[in-house]
Length: 325
Ligand SMILES: [Zn+2]
Image (cartoon, rainbow, N blue to C red):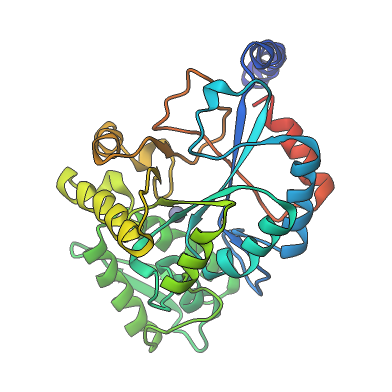
């Protein structure tokens, strides 16, 4: 009860304060997308259909200033929106790019280099395929983390969904070698192999080059293996950050100056991670928690708002709401 009262009072105060702040210093709202495509199953709600994406882009183009992630936003004299994508799925080049070019909207794509050109799934997509879509699975998955074995029931769809989200949580906290060990256990349990995929693959190098060539596109780095950086020692973090930059620069022949943290919540990177990004030559880094960008915002913790597969009316309401959050 008191808690509810506190929340109501806080939002009553926050809205006028934000309105004042917004007049004094027009904010930039950064949006984060992952995929533009139509999927049969999308448990993490990462895909926006091409139709909804086109309508979302048209709404922004018609109503709001659009800025690029690498721009100096301190010079911005009116509120603006910036579009970003994380991970490097093939649909970014095949389905999102034509719409961005058709409507005329700039976007920055943060790419994890380790899966580019492999036709392999990202690890969370492999988990989803095995746990959510696997046929004739045993009734429980016993994960051995080297110290103890934990069993997750997988008899019903609800149990499988819970198992999927739990294993994602567990695997987020381990390094790439341990992650590979857990995936091998899972494949062995399900009697399946690592598969090549068309629906969940990352871009090929040619697709990445096609994307990068567009005048509407900026490419940024997003580590090599998409590991939670706060779970790694500093030397491994440094390698993930620098190697992804170097590889993108070798493929594209241009400087890579912006970065986004895998997963991107405040607990997914550390002060050391921010310093490493600065020292590696990045000028800005994107996080993944909600908020507006003002002149005083830390350029190495740029907040972003996740976009879901919202139809235009919902999207327009959400965008209006982002000015007061
Ligand atoms: Zn990511």
